[in-house]
Image 1: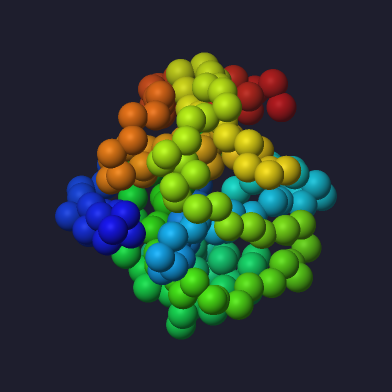
Image 2: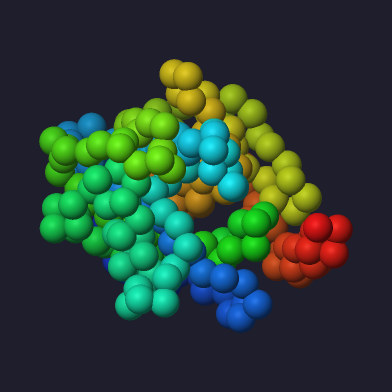
Length: 204
């Protein structure tokens, strides 16, 4: 069963951690349902948001001083954005960190939620939430491979939603690492990220 394989893989994995004190930390919740056909829960961010406007993303956001760790951040943000009750969430654990183009050190946190979990999109940050079967990514092919500097990752079209960018990179790395896919992927070089962030800050 793919969900069992995924859970065991993450529990026995030593995730990549990036010691970069210059970057603010953020966390996202990679919530997968416990249905016979597991689905991953994604959101469509509001076009009014300051970053990632109108893009598909995992629930998540910036770590606050009151958060004990990245897991609490991911759970808090998921509750705020899609009404996911933390008590219904079985946290599996953090996965490998990545750097966003907006200067955040992002930790994806895998979690399992009931297939009939009740969600909402009442948050001003989210226009919609939706579910995608893991088999869609595992058995199918990406529509394109995007390149952003030293980043490389897949782009999928699912119904009216385009899944790309850092969200697709984190998803593809998880699938490659634990689900046997061989999606074309490059997380980029850390120094390239830092140089680009410094350049953007100067230009801004």
